[in-house]
Length: 121
Image (cartoon, rainbow, N blue to C red; front, side):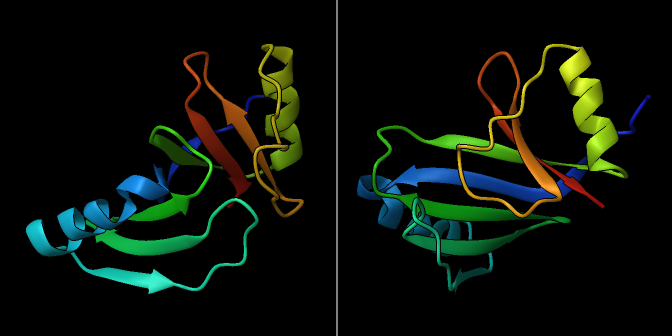
């Protein structure tokens, strides 16, 4: 049981509502990156914008109930069950209560509190 973790292309930045518009202006008007609003139906994210960031995608998520910004990263694995068991054997628990996810994904955190969306390739 030795899963291969790889970085995914998605980076989510959870932004408090009070800072969201200024953040959009920064990415769209100051950095002049391609920024497109995307439809979203999520109980914790009220708006989201997709930003092309080289080979990656940054998701600017407006969260009404946050007081500070958080950056969430994506991990991909070939088998979610094997990866989950491996992490559990190293005292890393899933924390799927953070946001609703499909069955082939889990939320995990590093010891500093960085959130990762772990999903099957």
